[in-house]
Image (cartoon, rainbow, N blue to C red):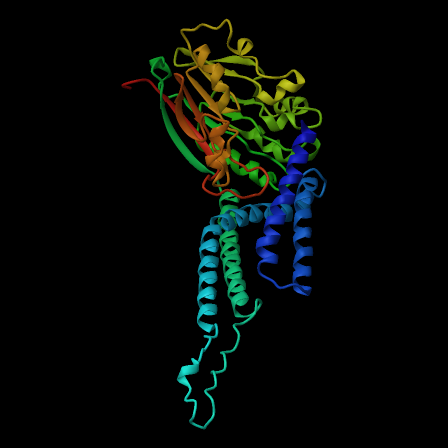
Length: 424
């Protein structure tokens, strides 16, 4: 599976850079030294993508990952803008072609035929001479080629400015403070005594070589300011080992809430060489309780809320996948239940077990437009609150980022959900 993913990634990177070379190098330069130099620059930029992946796993990952991930974002938006400009390019080339054809037709010499009867047979004098033809139209590579070159360079410039501007705003969004989303959630069967219970939800923190301890410290300050009853971390917290990122996670010990902080695994926890085991133990040391296919009781104002958590689907390959029967089986069905599950698609099983509310992440809200249009192919909810088969599903956009430190159209967020009974 991993080998297949790597091969696919290599093919995508190669094809993408070939397209960029064709549009940004071959179409904008004539054969010669400049084209050769830009070709080698394109090859080097392709290798930067590999450097980013290696850097994200190395001791000096911060310095190695930054340039590679930044180029990855610029590369993506260059492709987006260039594809959008393919139609204007085609129209422009068509106009140039027709203009050139009309120019050739006008410049073509007109044959002059002199009828024999029109020449006086007996009158001495010079015979009529046909006019000299107009100069031949410019050969290929002259003015017509210059116009095409100008068009290609103009469109390449537009794509470059568009990509750099988009990525610039995206970096500012990704590295800036998350947005606080305050969301009232009306649950039709909510015990009135649970009305007003507040849950702070954060997901996809993605602690890694680019994000440092300041990132987690800011998240803790912002979450604590919400004065929530429960804090829920719904997966993809780290992209590295405890040895690499333990210091960055340490501020989580300072999380404050009335009934505690809870965690469920995301797919990235299973991408670690030894799985999520060491992080599970580390989180317990940080006063964060993992819910591994289990549930706890939250006693609030005389009522009890079942808070359950299931492992991510990625754990299935190692026998640590989600077990809904274990997490939800045998409970008092008269109680309300909130489920923590990293991927929104897990609602397919949650809805058959009477779950009132599922809290998820995973999608990043798309992170980079137009990926938000692709996410629905795999997940039932991209971001926000929706009802799926009778179960409310709230999907947070996540507080961090994966890959490029860029977010476009999907700012990072921390969510504060307040449970409400109907007509309350």
